Image 1 (spheres, rainbow, N blue to C red):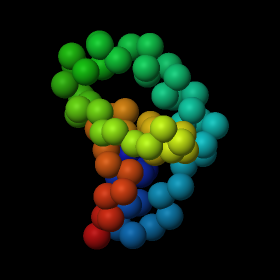
Image 2 (cartoon, helix red, strand yellow):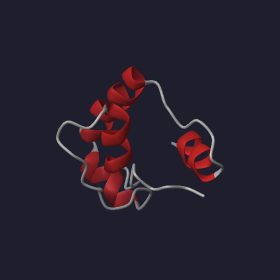
Image 3 (cartoon, helix red, strand yellow):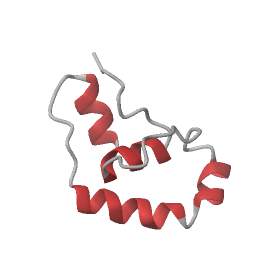
Length: 70
């Protein structure tokens, strides 16, 4: 996710591997309560139901996929 943060903030290509995003999200959703309790992730940002895996993963960790960056 740091890749997305830095890429978006600096106006670079921020597209992540969609299969990997889906795989990460699948694993993280199973541990959501523990992840949220750790304080390392913000409140989930809602994304459209038909959002791609990257947007869903970003929303899950508390990032707004439509954040314009710079």
